[in-house]
Length: 491
Image 1: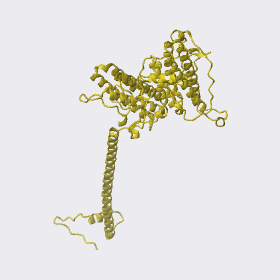
Image 2: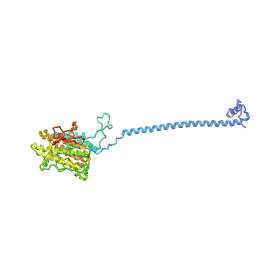
Image 3: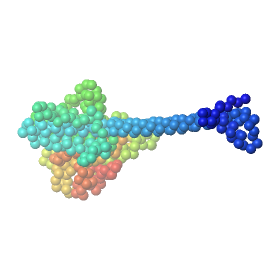
Image 4: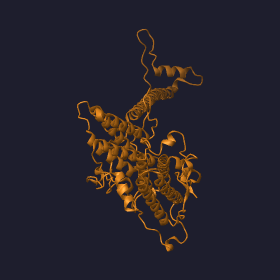
């Protein structure tokens, strides 16, 4: 039985859900008032469905809100990560220094030489300003050193140069290769005697570094070392002191050993550099004259150093030459050139008023030819027998002194070319031969160039002997297109 509330004071029944449902069912055809139970049950179902629908709607709204919040959170996190990565990359790229360049031994030798030359040039200019009597000599030394520093420096390449920079440069070299600082206004300038010692040491170090450097830099280092050698001799003559350098013809390959020879670097070996007992200066020419008077000239270890290995035996050779072909061709050309020079000086001795210097230099060239022949024999390549005589041109007879000066200058250019073409096994021989040729050419009256033997290339010429120069028609070719020096031609 269903309880139905009575009418209110106005006589109206309350229209609650139950009454409405009964009314609807009663108004529906085929439904009697006695069937109100069914109507009540239907009312509960409708209520439950309405409540379930409301809950689903609220759940959908909550799910939508949660999804939106998750999407916004993911977007914000992604944006934060992107910004963080961008800022980190900008900081990393903006502040990181380029990796330090690793220099090869040859490049390190160039860097060290450049810094040494520039430091010496600064000291020479400071000493020139402090001593007007030596200003001309010291200024010439400084100018040569500055040109040598420019020639030996490493090629410059663009490296993040600031806008408006005149010349981009490589990353700064190691501290050991940095140029010596210019003397401060309050610092006492180097005295000429100290400068002489530094110039001597730099010369020996440059010649030593040339032995193991790459072919191109080796030529510059050897040429610069020969110039500094001569500048030290000239400065010592002005100062009246010895240079403690050996005679150029007596410089050996062992003297160029960076660990124990005359060029030993105290910074590398930890001991002072050994200084040969023989001193070169104004007395060097006298030593050559003594060699001529003794009749045997320079020994076989002069000019180019001793042959480290004796001539190969027939069993070792077996008809097959040893070593690179460039080495054998260089030694063949040197043997012939030195033989021609020997004969030229013998002829000049008969034409000059004082034959002794010419005879001394003839003996020097004979010793150099013997040394080259011995080194050639060690490579299983026999040297051609020296001809009995050579043809001498009219220019040689007209002015033998000038012809000999040109001959020695040709030797300088010849050996400068060989420094770059021979292997490291023969490099020390070529370097010492170049140094000896430079000293002889300047003693003969040739001007001292900042880079002896390389000035013909700088001027755009080949250095070939002129047709009137002695030996020009028969000058043999050396490796790399370097013409052999002039001398009396084979006859």
